[in-house]
Length: 198
Figure 1 (spheres, helix red, strand yellow):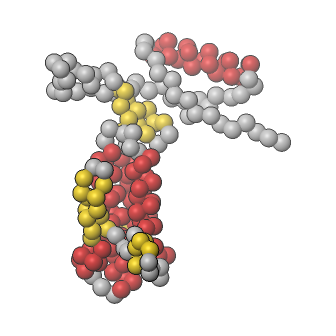
Figure 2 (cartoon, helix red, strand yellow):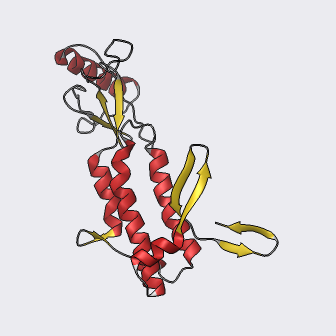
Figure 3 (cartoon, one colour):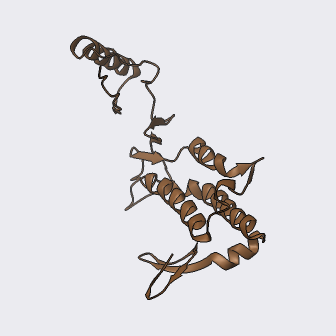
C-alpha cells in the first residue's frame, strides 16, 4: 500500500488573526472532504511574522524591520521578508564536534590521511553553508566554522602526535577565488605528471 508523501507549504497572509484562523479551518475542511487528507494542527501554527519567526525548511522566516537603515532616502528594509539561520540549528550542527563544550578530535577520522581529514571537514561545512546562503545572517555560522576548524586541527594533531598550532601552520594556505584571495586549510597530494590533489 502506498501512502502520500507529506508536503510542506508556507502561506503568507496580511490581516487579522481571526481571519487567518478562518482560512486555516477552510483549508483543513477542503483537505479532509475533497482530498481525504488530514491537516496536522500541531505542525500548522499561525505565526505573527513581525514579532515571531516562522520555521520552514530549516530557516526562520520573518518580516524585517529596521528604522535606521535607509536606501535612497527610504526605509527599504521595512516590511520585506527575511530569512535567518536559527541559532538552535547552529548549536545542533556544532554538537558532533564538541566534547564537554569544547571542540574535540574526531576519532573516526584519525587513521585517515591528511587530505581525507581536511576534505571531509571542508565538504560538510561547505554543504551547510551552501544550504543557508539565502539567509541574510549567514554570518551566524561563524561559530560552526571555528568549532569545525578546531576539531579538524585537533584530529590532525592527534594523528601526527603534534600540536594544533603546528597543524594550522602546516595546512594554512591562501587561494585565489572569484571574490579575491582567501585563507583556508589545504592538504595537497603531489602526483607525478599531474596537478596536485588538494
